Image 1: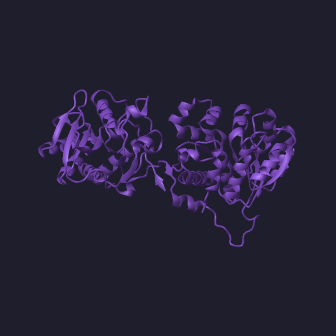
Image 2 (image 1 turned 60 degrees about the horizontal axis):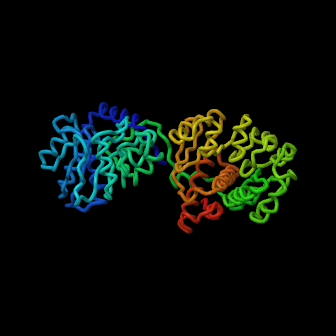
Image 3 (image 1 turned 180 degrees about the horizontal axis):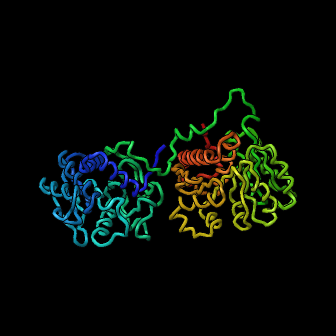
Length: 501
C-alpha cells in the first residue's frame, strides 16, 4: 500500500535524517536531480534542448543540478532563474554556481518571461515545489503561463509549481489551469505528497514518479494517508469456501426505491449480487416489485408498503425483515418524504452492518439522529454539505478533513465520493484513485452501495468493505469506459463490469 506524506512531515523527516546521520544534504539533491534527468529522457532525446525553469530555493537547486546532469549526458540546457546564482544560498546556490561554470545558457527573470525557444523538446518546472505557501506573481507567474501555453511536455520537480502539497489546491484560489503548472510527469521524492492525489493537484501532476533519494526507511515514521493498490484490495477479500452455499456468503437486505425511482433499487440489488452476496432481498413499496423482479430476477422482493413511497407503517415490517441479515443497504431511490424517515430510522440506528446512502443521507441530514455501529455512510459532496452545513466548495477544498469530521460526529466509517474518494474512520484515512469520468452518470452511487453491502455481508469490516468496494467499483467504471467509450457508459454498464476477485 502506498502512503503519502505531508510536505511538513517530509521536511521534518529529511532534517532529522540529515542531522542524525551526517549524510550530506547536497547528495540528496544530486539523487533528486538524477531522477529528474531520467524523467526528461522519457520526453527528450539525448542531445536535445531542454528548458529548466528554476526558483531560488532547494527546488530550484534540484533543477540546476538536473540541468548540469542533462548537459553531462550530451544535452543542451537553457535555464531561467528567479535569482542570480551568487544570491542563491546553500546547496541550491552551489549547484547554480556550478551550472554557470559549466556554461549553461542562463537567463535571470526580473519581469515577464521570454518566449520559450522553438527548438526545445521539453521543460523542467523547478520553480517552487512543496515549499510555496502563497500565490505566484510577477516573473514566476509569467514563467508558469509560458510553460502552460507551450505544447511541450513539462516535468515538474516534486510537485507542479502553484499546487499546495498538503491539499492539492492551487494557491491562487482561482482557475487551476491559469495559476499552476500542468505537468506531463511529476518526479517527487521518497513518498507521494497528499496534493499529488487530491484534485485539482492530481489533474495537474500528470504521471507520478516516486524517486528514492537515499533516506533510510527507519527514519520515516510519518503516518500520512494510505492509497489503495490492487494487491491491497485483493488481500482484504474474504476467502470463498469451496463447499460454500448461498447461506455462506451473506444475506443483504436492501431498503430502496420508490415510484419513478425503481432503477436505483435494481442497480443496488444487482451490484450486491455481482459482488458475491449469497442472497439479496429488496424491501420496497409496491411500485418497485415488478421492476425489481424483472431487472434483477436473482434478488427477492418483499413489499412492505402499498403506496408510492415507504411510510411510517413499514417500520415494523422492515425491522422484522432485517433480523438475521448480515448487512443492510438503505437509501437508493427512497424519496425524501418525512414518513420514509420514520420507516427507516430504527434500521439506521441498529447495529446491523449497513450502508447508508442517497436519500437516506438527505433524510438523516434533515431529521437528525444517530447511526448504529458498523455503518458506512457514502455521501457525495452535495450530501456531505447537507449533513455538515458546510459549503460544497469548502468540502472540495478539504475532503480529508470533512470526511474525518463526519466519521467522528457519527462514530462510523465515511466514504466521501469524488474523483479521488476519501474513506475515513478516526485517524485511519485511505484514498481511492480508481474510476473515471465515465462514471459521472446517475446510478453509479447506487451500484457502489450494493457492492459495499455485499462485502460486509461476507464478513468484511466496514472500513475494509468501503475501501475494497470503492476500488473495485472504480475499476468497473474504467472497464466499462474501455468497452463503450466514456460518453456511452451507464450505471448498468458499470454494474455488469464488476469483477471482484
